[in-house]
Image (tube, rainbow, N blue to C red; front, side, top):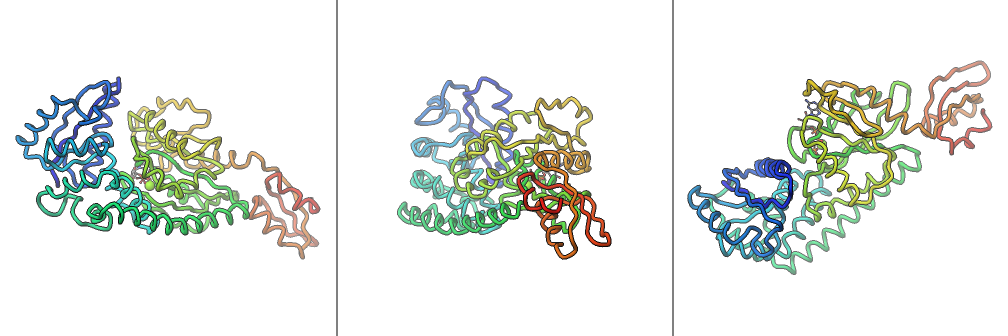
Length: 418
Ligand SMILES: Nc1nc2c(ncn2[C@@H]2O[C@H](COP(=O)(O)OP(=O)(O)OP(=O)(O)O)[C@@H](O)[C@H]2O)c(=O)[nH]1
Ligand SMILES: [Mg+2]
C-alpha cells in the first residue's frame, strides 16, 4: 500500500457533506491500494486556482509529509494542469486527485474490451493536458508494486508517451469503440422491433443494482444467468441485459449497468456514453437506492444529475429503497416519490411487489383481449406471446381460444381473431 494523505478544500456550507465526501474518497483510495493516514482540510470560499489550497497551507502539508513519511497526496477535487505543476514544484511528491483515483479503479475493474477502451480514452483525455506534471510525479515514485503509477497494464505506460502519440491513440480507440457502439445500436434496434420492453437499473455505486437484477432473475421463469455482485465500488462496468418472465408470462428485459459516484469525472461519463445510452431508451427506470446510507438523498441527487447530463429525460421511474433488511426502522425511510418501494435484494423482501409495480408500469397501454385462432394460424399466438403475453390458452375442437394482453398500438395485428 502506498501511504498518502488527503487534501480537501471545503467550499460547501455543510460540514457533514464535506466530511462524507472525504470518507468516500478514503474508500476510493483503498480500492486502489492507497492507504490514507491523515487528512488535511481547509475552508475556503473558492479553490485556489494556482495551488488548490492557500499558500500557508502548503507549509503545513510539507511538514506533515516529512513527519509521517508520506509517499503521495490525494486531492479531493480534479486538479488543473497548472495546479499539478505548482504543487509538484512546491512539494516534490506524487500528486493524485479524485479523478485520477476513480479512473484507476475503473481501469482495474474493466473486463470487457469495450470497457477497457472506454476507460483508456477517459484516462488519456485526462492525462493529455497534464503530461508534464504527472510525469514528474511518476519519476519520483518510490518502491515497487502496490502503487498504481507503475507500469501495470495499458494505461500507465501511456503517461510516458508524448502528446502526439496520446492523441493518435485516442483517435484510434474512438474509432474502434464506434464499431462496438454500432453493434450495440443494432442490438437495441432488434429488441425494439421485437417489441421488447426494457427496464434499466440505475443508481449510486454499491447500492445493489446487480443484486436486484439477480433477485428478479430468481423469480423469473426460464434461463437464469446471474450477474456478478460484490461489496466493492464499481463492481459493474459493463452492461448486462437479461430477460425476465413472470409467473403470468409477462416478460421484459432488465439492464444492469455502471454505478455513479459523487464528482464522477466528466471524461468518464463521456467515454461511457455508448454504455449509458441504453438508459435513454429504457421504457422504465428503476433507481436503486442504498437506504442504509445516511446520505442516500445526496446519492439520489448525484445519480439524477448524471442521468440528466447524458440526456435521460421523461422516463417513468420507480425508486427502490434497497437493503432494508439492515434497517430496523426502515419504515422511517419515507420515500417522497410518486412511485417508490422498499426492498431487500438479498432477502428477497418485496421483490414480488417490485415485479408487480414494473408490470403495472409497462402494461399501462396494454389491453386485455380474447382471441379465437384457427389451428392453421397458430403463429398469431407466438406473436401475442412475443409482443404481449398470454394468460390462458384453451385448445378447443375447432380453434384455440386465447386470453391475453397486448399493447394497444398492436391491436390491428390480431383484430380479425377477436
Ligand atoms: N444486506 C444487504 N446487502 C445488499 C442488498 N443488496 C445488495 N447488497 C450488498 O451490497 C453490495 C453491493 O451490491 P451490488 O449488487 O454489487 O451493487 P451495485 O449497485 O451493482 O454496485 P456497482 O456495480 O459497484 O455499482 C454487495 O455486497 C451486496 O451483497 C440487500 O438488500 N441487503
Ligand atoms: Mg453492479
